[in-house]
Image (tube, rainbow, N blue to C red):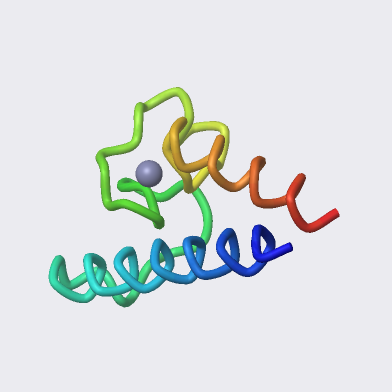
Length: 72
Ligand SMILES: [Zn+2]
């Protein structure tokens, strides 16, 4: 029964730590398309992904997909 709450808390923790990481890296002003670095974790974006206009690295994109599934 508490599973949904636990998952939500975990996601919140992730979001908070990511936001803090961005602040530390001075990445609070992030362009929304074709980012040089992942908007989630600040990892350098692979050139092909960047050219396709992605702004999430592979692992963060997978995370986002998982979250989408979770909230459907
Ligand atoms: Zn990333």
